[in-house]
Image (tube, rainbow, N blue to C red; front, side):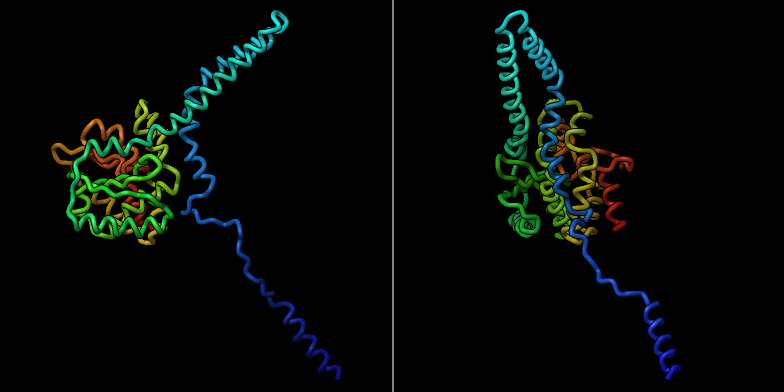
Length: 299
C-alpha cells in the first residue's frame, strides 16, 4: 500500500514540474508599423499650421510684448490695458484667418495642373486606370477621386487636392509602359499619402513661395518612403511597386518633358517620383526612387 502511494506521489510531482499552459493574450494596444497611427496622421495634417505659426512667430512675439506693456501701463493711464487687449484680440483674430488661408493654399493645385497638361492616353488606358482606382479607393477608404491621364513622355503620377475632392494624374507614358500590377502599386502609393495625411502639406509646399530646403521640410523628408511602406502593406505585393519605382529610376525624360521645367521643380513634392529630374540615383536620400525600390526588394 505504501509503495503505491509513493508511486502516485512521484507521478504527481512529475506533473507539477511540467510547464503550465498559458493562454495567449492579444495586446489590444498593438498596431502594425505599416499602418498609419492616429498620432502620425495628426502630425501630418497639422504640419502646415505649425509651419505657418513658426513663420509668424516674430510678429506674434512683438504684438504680445506690446500688448503686455500696454496692460502694465494702467499705472500711467487707466485706458491703456483696454487698448492692449483690443490690439491682442485683433491680431489673434487675423492670425487665425491667416493660418486658415495658408492651409487652403494647396486646394487649387489640381486646377493649376489641369491648365498645364493636355489630355492623353487611350480609352483602354483610361479603363485600366479607373478599374484600379475604383478597387483601391475602396481598400484605402477614399472617396471622390477623379482620374486624369495627361499627355507626357515622363513616368509619374500624383494625387492632388481639388477643393474638397481629389484628382489623380497619371502620365500617358506610365499608362502605356507599365504593367497593371505596377500601375496598382503607383496608385496605392498615392492613396497611401492621403491615408497618412500628407497631401495638405505636400500641396502647400508646392504652392507657397519658399526655398527648396523649406519646401522639403514642409512636405516632409522621407514621406515618399513611408508611403511606399503603407501602400505595399495594403496591396500585399511590394514587388509591383518596386518594379514601378525602378522603371522611373531608369527612365530619362525626353525633350519638352514637364519634368524638366521650373513648374515641376516647384510642384515636385506632390508627385510619385519626387526627383524625376534627377540624372543619377542618390542612395543617401530616402525619397530617391532607386533607394525606395531597393527597400521594397528586402520585404
